[in-house]
Image (spheres, one colour):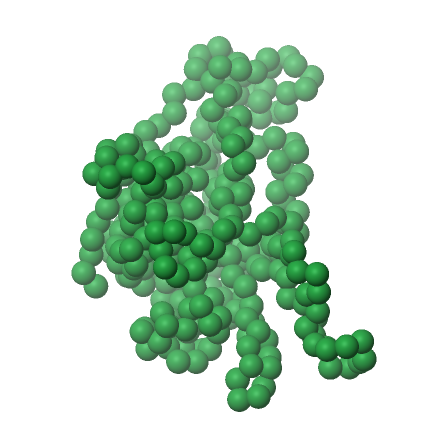
Length: 323
């Protein structure tokens, strides 16, 4: 989040927006009327890291989660071959059947009107001398619709590249070059009908975004740099996505006090942002080696001992589950 504070949800307690101000947005004016000069009391939140397989999220009750924000292992990307092989998945379809079990659980735990945000990239790979695209986003849409989700307009995440020549192919002669793949998808799904709120719901209005945020977030193409993929505490690449993506999605599709779940938590980005934006969170991760990375991210330091780190993170707990 580039060091910025959550102005609309935190600083507003002290700002006490003027309901008569011409620069104030409609939600700001309504919030001022509802608060009547009183500070907004923010709820305490809880954050549960579960070391276990998210194909069975038995710790979470039916229809109890408001938002899913995640980025799963990408089928047919070499980085994830070892994981999929361990799960018995040896081809493109089998990999997506594995992921489909997670999407089925996501549907179960979401409330009616809950949103699932899935960051996924397509894969380019050469197998048996055949170079082709493996459309991961298409398979996820197919499986999620089969589960019962409604597909919403997706976001294209365009990553800036530092490569001087991102061209796939050779020379300047047609027709055998390939279009550069420099976008990933943020797929959006809803369970059931749009979520309902009581009229003039205080927490909903306190969770509003600004005009500039609305105008830049609710566009279909996001140009954002990727996250750093190396961490000195982990020997392998971590495949993390940027905090800015989690921040936008959580602000766009949840309100203060909601529960956000990431079934592929990784280094803990979703949980960190949920904590900072006063949402509860649950994250599933099968790699125990990532625990100190997640703890360090949640308390903004990896220099403390594990015991002191956990004490420094309010509302945080770890559940070890033997799958």
